[in-house]
Length: 194
Image (cartoon, rainbow, N blue to C red; front, side, top):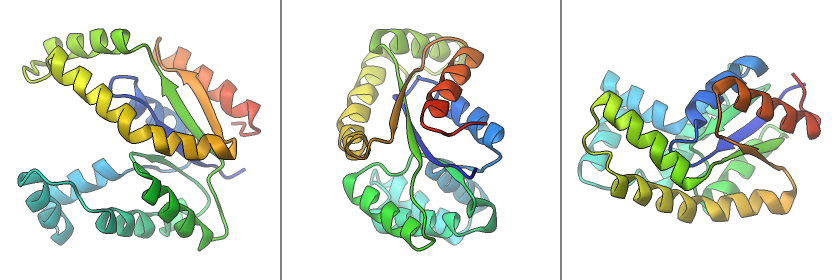
């Protein structure tokens, strides 16, 4: 079965790790808009230069540009039969745009994996990572602000998908294998087995 999935979770809940594990297990590409932007910036492409200019000035990449990138990526051959989105959609307007993009190929999202985690546990995890990796800018105040921004931005997106009955909540705390097994079981409950 092909799987068209979205994964969401607060910073520090292991979303990137689980996205890679899940995409590999399903044999679908993990598509992260952030990764696409960073790769283009690194390669100095036209898109990368545009994104770098926007980000350097403190702005957000406009929906029109993000939507165009996602549309192009989802129409590439490796994503036709399935994918795992990470970082998109972030707004209700992007949910509507994603529906439109998928309708072009007669498909829709099968499920949204929502990693949930106790905020204090996540802060502790991220502070430890910051210390180990020398990230002096990852203070408790900054981490808590990122948590607040995540919840503020993603609540409407999650609500839209909950209304469709396609959200599966998974505890994001524990070892990589423990969380991966929970994800697998939650998806099996909605008939996505691998």
